Length: 62
Image (cartoon, rainbow, N blue to C red; front, side, top):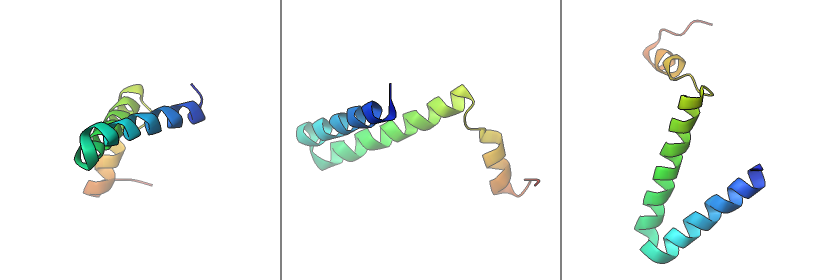
């Protein structure tokens, strides 16, 4: 899927959730989509969660 197609699909999902569930449902769907995207990137290895934790705890080396 191209980024344009993915963006259009996410926009469609968010628009439908806003129409069906109102603003609260829209925010909830957007939040779960963002969490799902982060989890997918961590699982695929695109984001190294250990480096992020080390940066916040001050154990990062440069």
